[in-house]
Each structure stands twice: as structure tokens, then as C-alpha cells.
Length: 291
Ligand SMILES: [Fe+2]
Ligand SMILES: [Fe+2]
Image (tube, rainbow, N blue to C red; front, side, top):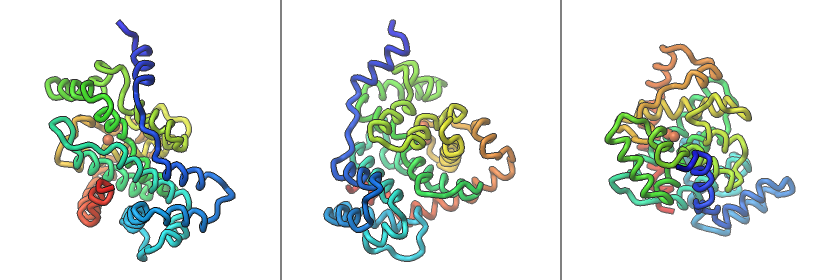
């Protein structure tokens, strides 16, 4: 019998985590270089018309909440800032890299709806509790379950087994993952984040979205993502197998000072409305998936 550590080690070595596409990598490096000017960054993105189109679509979506139309990359950089641009480019790269067709084990539409809903709710929740709102909250929500995409794409037989266990038993997805793989989608998502050189607090939010008590770098962000994930699941009428039975984590509620049942219910009602409007209005999945 392999120990959980050995299984984890094996998963880490066999996993063929995709690299960030070259252009996205270039954008990330440019943003991280303090000498980069807005013009240089604009020129790099504008040189790729497909990327430009996608960036503008997302910049104009309600997720960034900018009231005026953003029609050029240069203007997007000015109003949204370097970091938001970087996050947008990473999100685009992620979606196109991990895209898979729907089958009986994985519903692509539901997956991205859930990811986007978690991102949107995370932004709203952050604002509601007075956390400084930046694009990072949306991106952390969008990416929180990317380990699920990795499992589906790179470990499909194990993924199928996990889903079957969840369907046939009362085990949670997490327990089923542990029994089949010895690691969870949270950890796998965290490894991908590290490999993509995402900022540490984003990696942490992905890694601990089901165990917010373990956060040390930015417990608030992790708590927001944990709660947004639960809200997104409660609002969604179709139960997602990989979030089956998700409930608010006490540690997250502590960090956010959110132990008020009535307030939670009120937020849930508000977010439910937002999600319905935003998802309908933008159909962002088709923007992202067609990349
Ligand atoms: Fe998850
Ligand atoms: Fe989730």
C-alpha cells in the first residue's frame, strides 16, 4: 500500500500540468516588471487581435463594473490597471487551456457557470464586508476549482471513479478524492497555480478554498472564496458533484465576522438576483469558451 505522501508525490510527478501560453506568460512578465509602461503593455496585447477582443469583452463585462464602454486596450489598462489586465489574460489562458467537452462525468457549462458565479459573488461579498475590492477577488473565485478541470482532463479514469463513488455513496467529493488519489482538487489546483507563477495569495485561495482555517497569507481572501463557493452552490439549482454538501466553514465566518444567519440569507437573496442578471447578460462562457 502506498502512503498518502507517496500517492501525492506520484500525482505531482506524473501530472502534466499545462504551461501558460507564451503570450500570456509575456504579459505576466511585463506586468511584473516595474519598468514596463502602459504603452508597451498595450502594444503587446494589441498585436494579437484575438486576445484583444477577449480582453475587451471581459473588461466590459459587469464583473469589472466600469460604467463607460472600454473600446481600446490602452484605455482598459488605464481604467483597470496592470494587475487586472494580468488577471484577465491569465483567466483567458486558463479557460482555453483546460477546456473540455461535456460528457456524463463533467458538464462544461455548469462548471464555468459555477466558477463565474463564485467569482461574481466573491466580488460582491468583498464589497459588502468592506474588503478592498480588486479584480483579484473575481479571479480567485473564477479559478478556485481549476483542479477539477485538471482532474477531468489529465486524470480522467480517476476522475470518473471519484464521480461514481460520489454518485453511489454518501461520501463527499473530497473523501472520494482522498480514497482514489490521496490528494484533492484544491491541492492540484494549487500546484497548477504555482506552476503558472500566480501570486501566492491566489495560490493559497485555490489551495484552501475548502479548508479556510489553513490560510496564513491572506485568510480574508480565502474566507471570501470559501463563502462565495457555498453561496454559488446554494443559488445554483443543479447540484455539482464536486461541491456536494458544501456548507459555510466556521473559520471563514469567523474571519469575515459573518455569523448572522439573517444577514447570510439577505446576501444570498441579493446574490441570487445578481447571478441571474449577470450570467444572462454577458453569457461570458461563450466569450471565454470560444477562445
Ligand atoms: Fe472546490
Ligand atoms: Fe466550487
